[in-house]
Length: 190
Image (tube, rainbow, N blue to C red):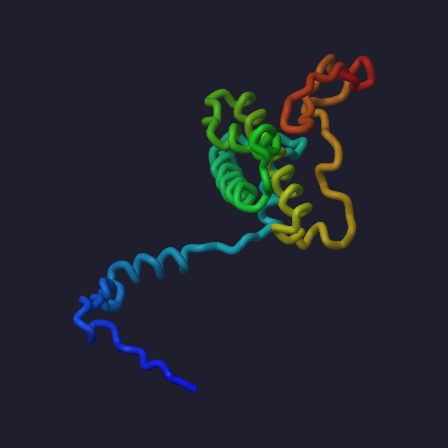
């Protein structure tokens, strides 16, 4: 049995290898404080709070004028959070992206109109988009089902509701993130 002696690199006159990695350094104190501030400001996902905002937007009682801007900002925040999660975890085909994500991205980028009635319509579209995205993420088991829906009851928004009183000629209903005009004299059919 013969053994082979291994020679160390550089011992035979070949140039040695210098390691280009710098020694580890502790992070700067300002960077650590910035990271800690972000961690402290983080709020965990609360599906019931999301559904409360969706209920405020889709409720048959119109949101008061002084709360429209606040509710719009909260819904936009929910859309940002849910769209980010959906883009990270829900597979999109290049030719046909998920329409709920596409609609939510479009609504998220729109400004809230200055006119009160148009602002209410925009809030309802955003509320519907938040609800649809939440359903998509729960369906794909990316987010947990909100506690208020775990008892087996139907979601609050199972059907579109007229936005004006019965007996009037026309009403609006939110359906799949679009507004449908209903003729009340024809039994509410489009």
